[in-house]
Amino acid sequence: RKEVEQDPGPFNVPEGATVAFNCTYSNSASQSFFWYRQDCRKEPKLLMSVYSSGNEDGRFTAQLNRASQYISLLIRDSKLSDSATYLCVVDRNDYKLSFGAGTTVTVRA
Amino acid sequence: GAVVSQHPSRVICKSGTSVKIECRSLDFQATTMFWYRQFPKQSLMLMATSNEGSKATYEQGVEKDKFLINHASLTLSTLTVTSAHPEDSSFYICSASDGENYGYTFGSGTRLTVV
Image (tube, rainbow over all chains, first blue to last red; front, side, top):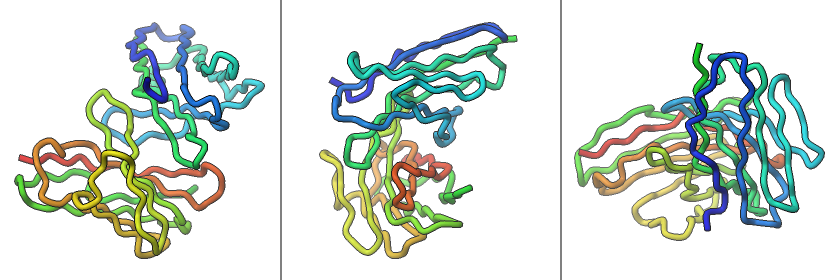
C-alpha cells in the first residue's frame, strides 16, 4: 500500500466553482500534514499546512480526519490560476516527507 | 523568504557519463538536504537525506554508489548521477531544511535526459 494515495483526477471545473478532493495516508503515527501545489515541470510549493481542527487560508480550506486517516482540500471560487497539481504530503515521523502523486485540477474560463 | 538555488535546470547527457547537480541555500544554513526524484505523473520519491559533514542516508532501493551525494557545507549539497543510463532520466529536486520542524524549501529542479 502506498504511503499517500490521491485521486489523480483531473478535476475540470469552470471558474467560480468549488472543487474538493481527498487523500488518504497509511502511517497512523504521522503528525504533520501539508498540501503542496506543483505547476507543470516545476518544483512543489507549500500551499498550506493542515491542522487537526481544520484550517482556512483565503479560498482554500483543509481538513484532517485522523480516525479515517484522510486529508481534504477544498477550493472555493476557483480561479484560472488555481490550475495545477495538488500534492498531499505527510510526514513519516522522522522529519522526512511522503508525497502523494497529486491531484490535477484544471479551471476553465 | 528562504531560497534554494538548483543547477542546472536541464541537462542532456550521453549514456555512461556522469552528471552533477548542485543545490545551494542562498539565505539560510541548510542543516539537512533532501534529494528527490520524480517520474512523469508519479509522486516525488525521496532518494536520500544528507546532513552537513556526514554521509548521506539513502532510502531503500537507491544505489549509493550510483547516486553520490556530498554535503560539504551548510549551504551546498551536490548529487552526482554516475554512469547515467536512459532509465535515470527523471526530474531531480532538492529541498533544504534549517532544522526547524518542517521548514522545507525546494530547489527548482533538474530535468535530466540521458540519451
